Length: 265
Image (cartoon, rainbow, N blue to C red):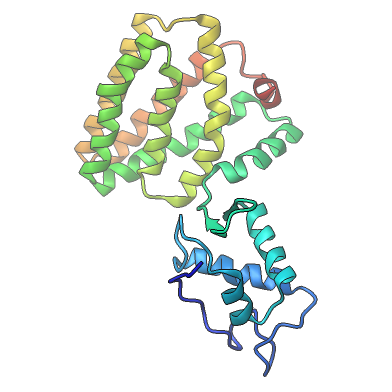
C-alpha cells in the first residue's frame, strides 16, 4: 500500500544508522528501528489513524530485513502504539495511547503496595483542586462551557437513570484534562477507572442517591463553574478541595481501608 508519510533520513544522528554505512548491523536492530518509528509518532510525523509505510518501503529505507521490521512492529504493538490486523493488507495503523495504557500496571503496583481506596481518593484530592486553579487562570471559555454542559445536560438525567457515578467521574476527569497540564491529566486518567469502579459499587449498594445529596452535589459543581468563569484561581482551588474532602468522607464511609484489589476483583 502506498504511503504519503515522509520517512526520516538515515544519518549519523539517526539511531538506525551505523557509522559510514547507513545499514544497521547491530544485534538490537529491531529495538533501534522501533525507536525511530516511535519518534515519528511522538514528533507528529505519524498521527493517530495513519498507516505505517508498506514493508518494502521501510525495508529499503532503513536497510533492514523483513523479520527485523516485523519484530520492530511487534514491539510497537506491545506498547499499543500501533494496531495490526492479522491477514490485512493495510498494514500497521498508529493508535495514540491514552492513560489506560499504564492504568493496569499502575493498578497492579497499587495492589502490591497495599494501597487503599482512601489512598486513591487522597491522591485525587491533591490533583483536582490544582487543576481547577489552572483552568480558572487560563480563562478558556470553551473548556468551562464543556464542564457546564456536563452539569446541566448530563448530570440530571444520569441521576434519574442511575448513571450518576459514571457522569460525575467524567466531570472530574475532564476538569483535569481541560486544565492543560499533561502530567496531571495522565495521573488523573490512571486513577479514574479505580475510583469510578469504587463509586459505582458504593452507589449500587445504596441503590439511589438521596435528593438532598444530589442537590448539594449540583450546587457545588455550579459554584466551581462560577469561580472558573470569574477567573478566581485560588478560590476555585479552595472550593474544590473542600468538595473533594466532603466527597471522600461520603463515598468512603466505612470503606476507606478497602484495598484497591478488592474493588477490582
